Amino acid sequence: MTEDLVSVVIPSYNRAYCVATTIDSALAQTHRNVEVLVVDDGSSDGTRELIAERYRGEPRVRYIHQANAGVSAARNHGLRLVRGQFVALLDSDDIWLPWKVEAQLRCLEALPTAGMIWTDMDAIGPDGQLLHRRYLTRMYTSYRKFTRDQLFRESRALSSIDARLAGELSDPRVYLGDIFSPMITGNLVHTSTVLLRRERFEKVREFDVALRYSGEDHDFHLRTCREGDVAYLDVSSILYQYGREDQLTVNRKYTVHMAENFLKTINKALARDRDRVTLSPAMLDQVMAEAHAWIGEQRLEIGDRDQAWRHLGASLRFRPWQPRVAALLGAAMLPKRVSDRLRASYRALKAQLRGP
Image 1 (cartoon, one colour):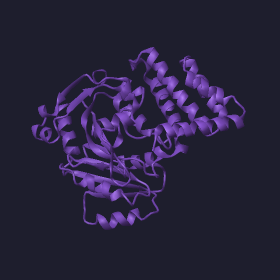
Image 2 (spheres, rainbow, N blue to C red; image 1 turned 90 degrees about the vertical axis):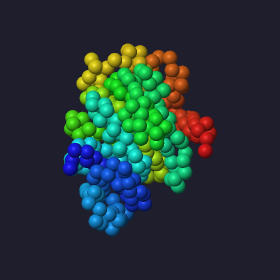
Image 3 (spheres, rainbow, N blue to C red; image 1 turned 90 degrees about the horizontal axis):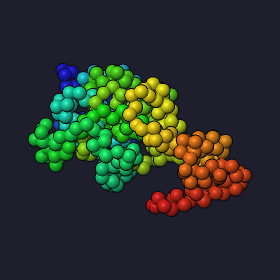
């Protein structure tokens, strides 16, 4: 039966050391009708053999191998093969809590206009220790720009939808609304927490493979939100793996791609749907100023002073009064030896302020 079948797409690259835990968490859902599509993006660490051995005889697991092409291509490969009426995405080092899919399905049943639902998450370290509860708003800073009432049109207690689940989960609230405009300011949705109706997914179709290394998630979720209402269940339903060395989000050389892809994403959205965006002109200027400043700072970090100068200058044109950006622009205009020394001092200060 496909009426309540949930297709779970797990892209993986050289994650044999942890992918089984991720797969097991999808198979352990209280909603048993799931298919798990593991898309191996050209791994060379024995992932194929691990899955063949561990999940032999498990009909709910489908293994797909492809030549290495990146996470977006791997997700797209899996998405083309899904059979369920609901689609979920799960990164190969994250872990679902057992009730995740069931709770999200109950919410979607009660909220027929919602095409997608996501949740909060707890962050864990490489050895499994809990680092941060309710990590979503800490990771995605656009939450600081809006209250819940500004983001969503309505909310209700989970107990009004499913009393049993509400009792197990301390009765969190479920929010519903159109968040396309707020998503222009930055991502609000974490991919491994998402559950999509198939009809919503089919309007969005796939991740943009041109957004290499990072930022493809924001673009995908922004386009999902463009198609109508979405819902948020205010409880952590996953354990998000934080701090492993093979994560792009902790690798300095990819941060510049993250910054540039953010600007590409919002420019694409504004070019297509400017008349639908309800953000004030001042907030749009702030978004553009922050985007250019982020790129400029990252370009300065890697020694690309010409591009740093260009983007920092663009940031100041959107918002002239930014002393920190002006200081970075000044550093970009200094002789290379001096700017390198200042950049090293700046990195050391940031590391000191960030702490261990």
